[in-house]
Amino acid sequence: MSNRTLIRGGLVVTAAEETHADVLIEDGRIAALAAHGSAVAGGWTADRTIDATGKYVLPGGVDAHTHMELPFGGTSASDTFETGTRAAAWGGTTTIVDFAVQSKGHTLREGLDAWYTKADGNCAVDYAFHMILSDVNEASLKEMDQLVEEGVTSFKLFMAYPGVFYSDDGQVLRAMQRGTANGGLIMMHAENGIAIDVLVEQALARGETDPRYHGEVRKVLLEAEATHRAIQLARVAGAPLYVVHVSAEEAVDEIAEARGKGLPVFGETCPQYLFLSTENLAEPDFEGAKYVCSTPLRPREHQAALWRGLRTNDLQVVSTDHCPFCFSGQKELGWGDFSKIPNGLPGVENRMDLLHQAVIDGHISRRRWIEIACAAPARMFGLYPKKGTIAPGADADVVVYDPHAEQVLSARTHHMNVDYSAYEGKRITGRVDTVLSRGEVVIDQREFTGRAGHGVFTPRSTCQYLN
Image (cartoon, rainbow, N blue to C red; front, top):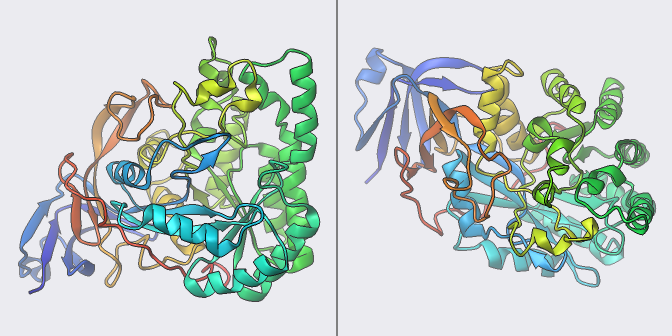
């Protein structure tokens, strides 16, 4: 017996168009769309009808940068795959792409299998993986080919964190060359970690230990320099490049210049860089530790360049880099030494809402909101049109969104497993009402009805901007 759901009366918003349409869902997929009030739509019957009058009907969000259960700095991210994907659903995100980690001295397969074990049977929404390459050698380069075949088609390298994740320019070049051969997309954490470590050591020697110095030593120019270097190495390798968590105007400029030359260079930014700044890092009584992430928050004047980059498509994607650590007992590990504060912010639940607020504030259009939060990440990482749009044949990952509801973001009401909100007290307009994941209602009029294990691993094709 087929299972049919009908969503009636809403404004369907995709990256391509806005249309007043009813949406018919059958057996977990979008079956058809028809104009509201048309004879076609009027003839549809369903087991369940959802009234979306006065609301938007959106594709489920695709967050292409999360770190659930990530070990870092002697502790681990506080969201499990269960709590993190549940929070994602509450925020209208129905697919995450998390990062499996290769540890130095271990194979890619060992790292990927460890992440399968963490996620399998625990996720409330669908998930996929990128692979962090921490140990680039002949064996791991060969393994990249196997992972691409398996649907893990993107690989993250770090120019930062010497001794942990860092790869030198030779290793970066080799990985890029392999990506050129096998179709894998190289993702780059672009900061000059060798130089940053010198500045960290010097700052601590001067007694500069507060959280705000985290931002001061990780200088804008060291992000821009690494972004430039990554682009040139990608050119040498003939490889596409995706620069993660771009935070500074100078780094946007490097990406824009490369794209102006027609190079396959892509950029991602995150809500924290669009809405927060060094003013948060400088909050007194160690409160600034809540905002320690890398790349770091920048002075407020960088925000205009990031918004401009999103409007001009020099930046294509907004992901969260969701990597939460509780203030109590985790961020506090860096009391008296900012370099020991675990790097990361919570945000998987807030992204869709914050970007809707950006629509209201005039930074981006409604369709651009869906482009940067749903369609572009799906295309970038080989999930489109299964994910990222509302069209016949697509997975029925659908959000009924109330654009008029008002809410105040707060740790008291969010569902992420972390004891603070990076946006505490922020008033925004717009809120998720109902969420379907592959046709199953997981949020029903602000009530969680999903379950751990509903979400499934989703293999990906290669980057669809390169075909």
